[in-house]
Length: 93
Image: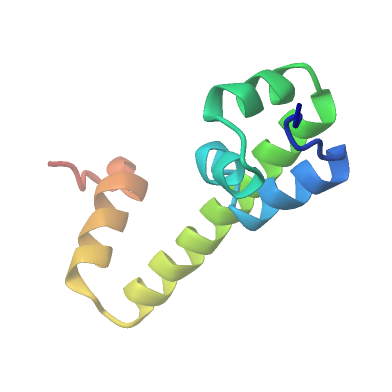
């Protein structure tokens, strides 16, 4: 009987980083069901930290893209930034 493929924690970490913390995508790349990978992550503090760090890195990338859009004068980005970051200056909807 063929068993399920087994992966090392390092291979799981790599999949999570490569998929920017997207557990569903990492599970697919490893041949796991999403709920199975969630269970593995829930049992391992290191993997929880890897998911958190990968998601934070993606947020940093998105924030950098938003900053570039503001500096380029893109109206949607300026508006979004003022509505979310300048509420103390009465830029609210």
